[in-house]
Length: 79
Image 1 (cartoon, one colour):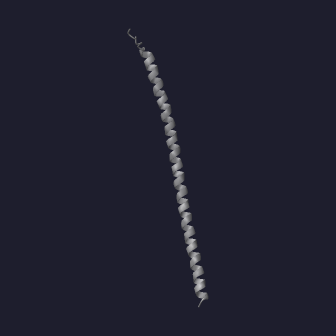
Image 2: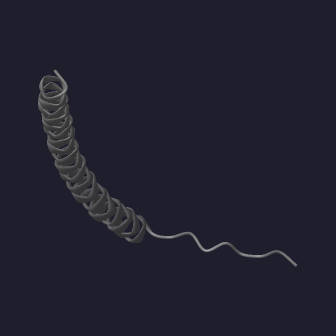
Image 3: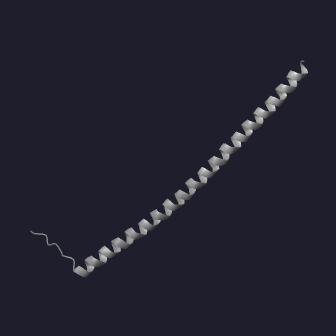
């Protein structure tokens, strides 16, 4: 017994293809929005890291300056 394969008509096939392309377009649009959001998040993280590096440098400089001042006063006090 042979199975009969029903051939789709050309307009139906075109409609299916158009729907598939529209679905892919929507998915691509969502991926594009996600990539833009991720790029913005990465730039925000870079900014936060640069602020943190600057704060650490300031704290180290202050600690060094205060330590130097204390050492100078102690050296003067022992003379």
